[in-house]
Length: 285
Image 1 (cartoon, rainbow, N blue to C red):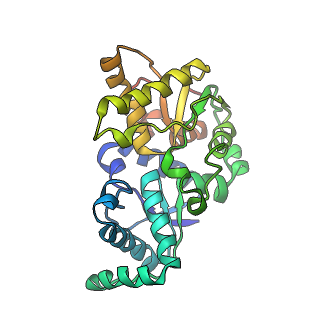
Image 2 (cartoon, rainbow, N blue to C red):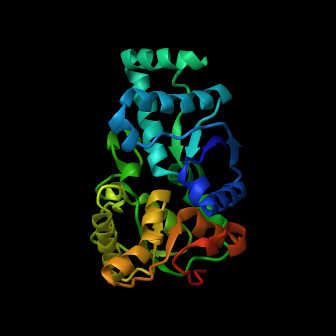
């Protein structure tokens, strides 16, 4: 398997250790990653609300770069996934819109053709690699009770993204269980992380995260697993802000899925930079 690797902005600039764990794990799983000169996705909320034509043209430029390389895109960011996947599908089916965007792309000698697909890391693990192969590579099973958080931009719009049932998702739980862990079902499983409102009302944003922390702990989870860098930041660094704003201490370890997969496969913490988390992590295998 070979993919054009779309990192987005958040991971290279703020969370490079998530890239490290992903590259190590995918190398172990014999997945080749090709780095291409991508730009910002762009963000599916802010940019789109200002100028949708520019939003689609910027996303289409990234899609063109993958098409020119003859590769499908693999992204490890939920927001990048939604932007690129939705743009790809919308331009494929809407000729009038495609012609409009291509007229903009012509200024930089590019043309969107719709020949590449867009996949999230979550889908590559679950659909392309599969649970059986993941289980075979586990050397040190994860001995923890973990809660999963899917994130809004991974599951909706359901008819386009087609990752899982947005009301009762199970695929990430199965991926975590494939590493030996027990997953915990909790009442606020589908609650947004709150990051989307942080720029408008930071206190409300972290109040949403606080509700998630309390619910996860109430149901006995020893950690939270995510597949989105924005959700990771909200839950990892956000605990320090919740501690300050609400005077509550949760000390809830937050893991990106590729990090616990790397540990289960036998990588040492130093190889994946897991010590860079803001919330101290206990031994997990």
